[in-house]
Image (cartoon, rainbow, N blue to C red; front, top):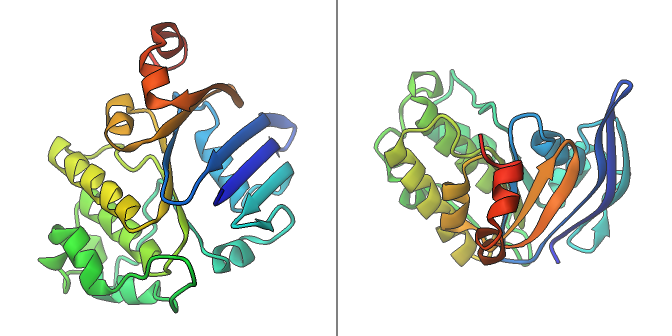
Length: 234
């Protein structure tokens, strides 16, 4: 397993957000963490990468226990995190944004160059000299993911990668994630969009009120309408 999370408990102040969350992802696997707004998806990702101060439980990445490590130490091990709010450098060009994220190759992880990423996201290739602040939301999402891949991670956490994107961009995003998987990258996405998750995911977890309510393959989830209605229906 590339990532193993067991018994994750997270708090913001007195608020108990996550209760006993478990999650795993194997090498080259795409795993979806599904749930409605406020279910605990973003807190799960933030907890994994050490951004939630009050957090207990076991987190193991690539065989290393990262439970007590700082965020920068976790990232240096090769765990990439793409937050929902697209933190690009608006005053740098597309190519400059990518070079900011560049790190040396990692043993056992796919290696990415700027040209590889322009092949992965052709839209970016057409605007390599454009400032980040002059891009659409979908283009900024592609750039954020690409900059993370320039760090040559073994696994990437993608928080709501399809949210707010036009249908055509969502299709391109799905194609890109499938290509990442072909390169051997492990990907964990948080999503509300079940259709998008179906296109790319091997397995799924459903989280509701900070607890895992389902854990299985996408085929198993499709066979359980009552689970989908209870935890994913709007």
